[in-house]
Structures are given as C-alpha cells and as structure tokens.
Image (cartoon, rainbow, N blue to C red; front, side, top):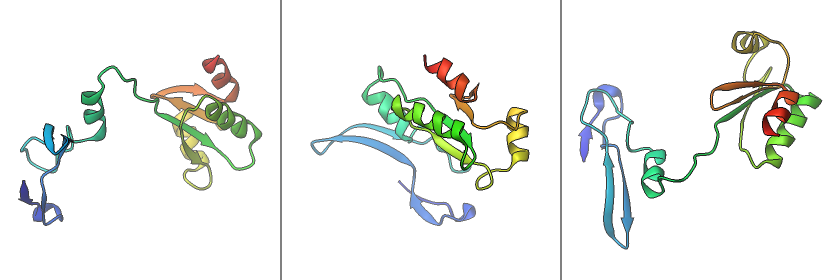
Length: 131
C-alpha cells in the first residue's frame, strides 16, 4: 500500500484506504482506485458509516451566516441547538464580508440559514422550517 506521491508534494505514503476490523479480522476494506492524482472517493468516513448501517440517516449539513451581536442570529442558533442540529457558523467581519453575503444570498440580512444546500432564509424562516 506504499506509494510515492512526491510529484504531489507528499513523498512516500500509504495509499488511501479505510477498513473495518472486528476482533483482529478485516471485515471490509475501501481502497481508493488507482488513478492519477490523489483520489478520495471511497475511503471517507461516510462510505464506512453507510456500510456499517445503510439505514442510518446522515445529519443535515447546516451553515449559518451571522454577525456578532445580532439577536436574530442568537435566536436561530438557539433553535438549531434546541433541535440538536449541529451547524457551521460563518461570522461576518471574521470569516466573510458583506459582499460575500450579498453574492451568496442577494441580501444583507442576517442570519442566513442553509440546510443541505437549500437556502432557508432568516430566523423566522428557520422557525417555520422546523415547525
């Protein structure tokens, strides 16, 4: 499984793979295909988790664009936390600018909530979505 990836700046390293080992016995391996570059298609955690429990529902991917001191942003975060929904927060002035917010949402209002790629909107929209 040792490969030389010097041309990519990695040097010698293990080929990417994941494996499920139970009581010292390999039950399943997910080995990346031998293609150009540095593939990362099947050795990821999601692939392994789907193998272990194909019926399990993946948690939602949630991003929240906020700004410090915004009471509506605090309300949206509290709603997500109440529903045990993990989120990634992008803070204006820290992680992004107002220009980015306008480019992504065509709005200057915060918070802006995205769930699994869908633009939900602000805190009132999130409340309706969760109801």
